[in-house]
Amino acid sequence: MVIKGYFDGNAVRTVEPVNLKMNQVVYISVPKKQFSSAEEQRITAQLEALDDVCGMLSADEAEAVDKSIQQGINFKSAIL
Image 1 (cartoon, rainbow, N blue to C red):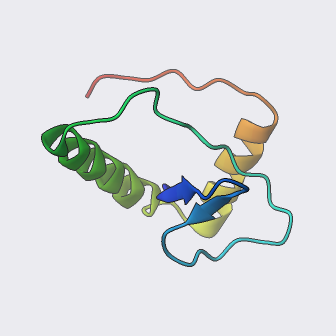
Image 2 (cartoon, rainbow, N blue to C red):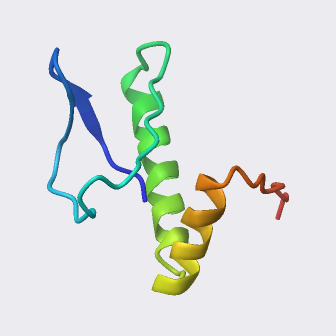
């Protein structure tokens, strides 16, 4: 799942409500630079495509991937 958010000076806040369990671990990636409007649109499209692919997993599969990530298992990427 990809969640868009912002830092309000005290905490990271999501733009839209999300359905997460209380105290669920999340990983936050912060871009190092500001992106142009075109770059932002391209990144948003790629993140939405990734979210669509992740949405194809069953709840059990998604949970297994989350557990693997928490345990530090590395996945190799493949070029399709």
